[in-house]
Length: 339
Ligand code: PLP
Ligand code: COI
Image (cartoon, rainbow, N blue to C red):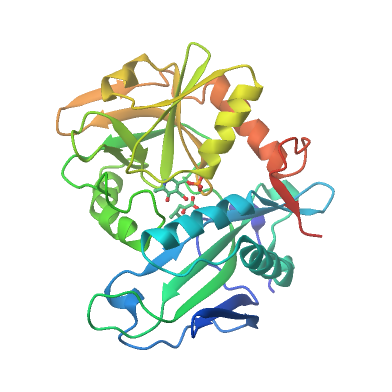
């Protein structure tokens, strides 16, 4: 491999050495296979291609100062994938098999795990697709689970710095009784127009209100929302957002720091009352929010008045990263040590 500049990595795909595959045929999951191909031979009538029978996950591995490699909350990702499988009628992969595949993919590609000092990490992308042929709208009988990895830098330009978001009302990402709580590709296809519009206008990402009433905050692009005020961490309770594992972790860390935690519907007018706010997710980590513009209404909610990350966001960010890189003790058992 040519000399890699780990500190300037973008959030993108880089070819690595191996991926790990498990096929589901005749009603059962087969052996765990190691593969060096980047492509998947597939039947042209596969259900993932026509009817969106596709799910994915996203988690990260971090190389510590002690050179050990840690994967963050992999059981939670296994459980969320199982929930997604129930949501779109795919066979569930056990947490054990998920763990084995993830750890194998990380170990086999160890040379791609960025060094501690770079602040970069190894993004792990498990993927489950319906490969069996169907022309009528039915679940497939055959599936393929793949885990690949790719080294990544920050999702938003500038890493941990305040960003602005645009409320876009004309497109919904998901419906309250739809698939928004599952990590299926269709939700991301549905988000592309809103995301393009926000990016074209110079925003970090689109910001969603609830699809039914457009009264409450849902989430920020591919990240959950949280607001901070009166020593309280407030995050939306909604039937159409992805249950973020980063958000779940931050709720725990906020509580550990002596803050109150509220998970409830958050009316959009409440935005003007927050002392700080952030977008959080595996890729985004924490991206502090500077301003949210409601494009159609022509209103602006300015949160970080000085345009800088606030003290609570900074403390949460530092603590989360410190646990992930092994600089702080893993009190909650979130980390799996790979080597
Ligand atoms: N919301 C959406 C729509 C996402 O795609 C993601 C990314 O996974 C998140 C929230 C954050 O979830 P997590 O913290 O589990 O990565
Ligand atoms: C993640 O945070 O893991 C995501 O899935 C974000 C995005 C790249 C889809």
